[in-house]
Image (cartoon, rainbow over all chains, first blue to last red):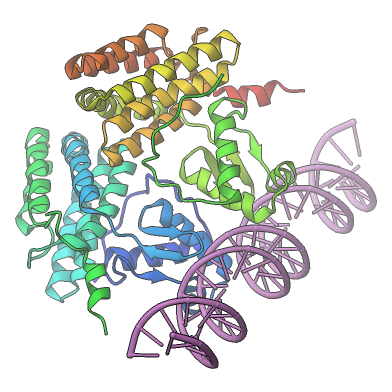
Length: 236
Length: 236
DNA sequence: GCGCACAAAATTGTATACAATATTTAAATT
DNA sequence: AATTTAAATATTGTATACAATTTTGTGCGC
């Protein structure tokens, strides 16, 4: 199973070299929920696991911190971030503001090539689910959204959406309460149909309801404990 | 002349210690146009100027790179960023999308304390202009916008606005063509009046036209050369 | 058994040394 | 004199050593 080709990054990569590789590896693990919110990321430990010096680790962690995937706490170390309920609500509010209009733009700018890329995304997502790779499916699901923002070709807003999708991954790790896969299967198909028709108004409405659907699957009652903390409490 | 107190940062500071100080110092110099787009920021040079080790410089530069104030180019060094015309347009489009509605929210949430803070901002801005500190006035002008986003109390969007304002500072350094101060004096006053009345609709409309006013003062014809590059061309 | 003080160990923050790469200067060639 | 090549120098990337801070472990008194 190959993953769909991705269009060019709008957020210009800041790191290059080994620290960029480490950052990507950790980012992937976070997005696939292999590294859970609250997890401590010790410098020496990562240095040993990845056979790089602490310098490279520190650079990668700083970058992940800027992406808000990791919290750096001075003199205490780095931890996979744990968004609050308040922040979860804010993130989805911002997504609701940015993504529907971005979907509208994407529909207007859609090419056959971009459409094929989106379809490949959905295909890969379903395949991941079929073989039980739920983390991967989750990540691909988020990337589908990012791909749409790239098609819309407004780099500044696409950069924000990438950031929001990344943060959403953490939010979902903590607050997701539905048993089924992240994005309802039908929703991405319907979006691709609208894109095929170059129907911006339909795409916009579908994206809006899709995001609302995701939001309703999150348990954002103020009493909810982040899953990461709950694990800590219960461990022997 | 004291600067107005600022409300709490929504973008959680990632750096602490000497690297944070260096970052702040460089950021201030960039925002006040003392450091112009395209300027090379050599590690050893900064290390010497600020009496810190290269480690600290590198950390600060990486952080500035994440804030998009600085371009890090592998094996070549760090340079104050130079946004393109295309990016300038995107940034102002994003601001037009986010800031009017943020002004609306701010008006609804306005307190006397926040109002006083905004008024102090305007006062400080005028004082800076009066003594010829145009760079400082420019920075304060941008901070006025950031302060409004903070009052609106949506941290995720406020974080984006901070980023957009920072980027705008570079755009203005390159593309500004008006002789007068950045933000027309009347515009900030009118906004504060609307906030005093807690008139969200008015605030929203005023912010929208204010941003349009800024945009029209930028020379974003494709043939425009960034000012930084022009300097390089003309130097002996 | 619990709490406190202290020491030891672990971890993070920073400086410095070394390696890799780019830029500038000097020498050789045309 | 102009161009090419080689050498020297400067700068950036990374590893490692040292300093500072935090965490863990141990011993002692109550």
